[in-house]
Amino acid sequence: MIKIAPSILSADFSKLGEEINTVVTAGADLVHIDVMDGQFVPNITLGSPVVAALRKTTKAPFDVHLMVENPENQIDAFAKAGADIITFHVEAAKHMHRIVQRIKEHNIKAAIALNPGTSLAFIEEVLPDLDMVLLMTVNPGFGGQKFIPSVLDKIERLRDIIDTNEFNIDIEVDGGINLITAKQVIEAGANILVAGSAIYNADDMKQMISDLKQK
Ligand code: DX5
Ligand code: ZN
Image (cartoon, rainbow, N blue to C red; front, side, top):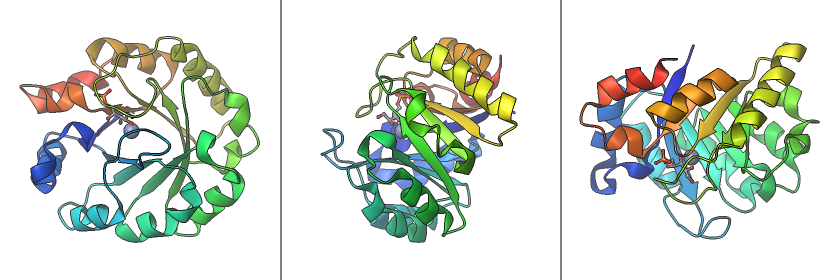
C-alpha cells in the first residue's frame, strides 16, 4: 500500500496547526516534518518545541526528518516531543548503529536518509535494524526542487535487497515528487512518498493525495 506524507515545509508557518489538519483531513497518512539546522543544510526551520506544540493538534503520525549535524544530540528531544518515526542522515552520523538503537529505545520507528550522491553500501550493516530508509530524490535543504532521476535505479536496488531478504522496511522518497515522478518512484519500489509543493500548491489537496497514490 502506498502512503503519502505531506511535507509541512511548503505550509504556511504562521498557522502550522491548521495546515496540518488540512492535509490530514485530505487523506495524509503521515505528517512529514523537515528539521534543518543551518549546518547540515543552509536553511533553519524548526526544533523540538514546535513539534511538541504541533503534537497537540493531531493524532496523525509524525515523520520527523532530521537534516542536522550530530543527530545523536536531538533524538531524545524529538522522541519526547511526539515523533513516531525519526530519520537521520547517514552523512551526518559518526555512530549510526548507536543512533538507531537510541531511537528504538523510545519505542518509535528508526530510519536513515541518504542523499542522492550517497551509496546504499553505507547502510548495509544496519539495514536489518531499520524500519524505513529515506532515499532523497533531491539534495536536501529546500522545497520545490527538481527530481533527480538517477535515484530511480537506487530505489530499485534497495527494493530488491529488501524483498530478497524479506526485511520489513519501508522505502520513503523525498523531493520533487509530483504526479509524473510519483508513478516512477512507485514503479521502482518506493512505498512512502513525501510531497511538499505538489500538495500544498494543489487546488484540491484530497484529489492530489489520492492521485499521487495511483500507479
Ligand atoms: C527537502 C525536504 C523535503 C521537501 C520536499 O530538503 O526534505 O521534505 O520539503 O519538498 P517538495 O515536495 O516541494 O520537493
Ligand atoms: Zn524531508
